[in-house]
Image (tube, rainbow, N blue to C red; front, side):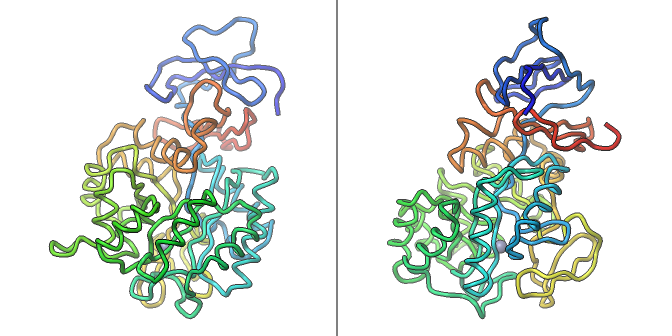
Length: 388
Ligand SMILES: [Zn+2]
């Protein structure tokens, strides 16, 4: 960490409340300690020119990048994903599993737990996200139903312990026996429960949300949708004011009009942009693996052989741009859907997620076309675009 305090100066700084022009942000020991129009002359200034300075992005739901998958259960795969994410302005992420056999799942959580306790070359692991095993075949998506298991407290404990307490999010289908009791148990461990890959009815989903579940996994995808006589899980998540909706903003998983509908119902504070990126992200079209299944990537869209969408090759910087272009929202709102909302969801908004006093100095530096020029963690440049 750079010890001498310095200012970052940028043409536009997206603070928690406003877009400031020609603004200065003081970084001291990795923390934001001053924000102002007029810098204290005793400190060095790094002038970012006509760039936009935004908070470091946080990807709540990502499986892999550049040929590596969280399910590889190796630290080197997590490091590759970490470095790759940094090229896209991401400073923190939840390493997300996919359905696999039980032992492989535990091995993956063991490695995520280790990775979450050490400094990685790029984006840092903020915890583990279990997207696997406890789902319904009807909405299995790219999950191999051969490995689906009933969710029990013992299995929760095994995953939680393997992750060394780093488990932050558990996705589950809530229509099974004892689900409400297990949701209550997960909440007591401090784990966020998200409803996904589920055929739950509207009422079952409402009951799960009342029991402590707090949102929907990639909303509309992998869940009972809205029918006018059965509003399904999607309807329950949209109508619950506290529930967070994960949104894959690639224009394929959700029609832009549905993205607008989600925005109108949830508002900017309850939409978390996620990538749901798989190991094909950052690579060319071709055939890849997601867990146990072959995935065919064509024009950047990943599908299983049966045609189900299988995650994405998306990045959060692109998601933000897509959301602005497709839904026509202010840039500050879209940025916060990929930073402050995820940080708040994880209970980390006191230190992460926005450019505000006393938060960690995690930033992305963007061009006016919203491409990433640099990424900064705890005041250190961890990525610079070759042209920057
Ligand atoms: Zn999924």
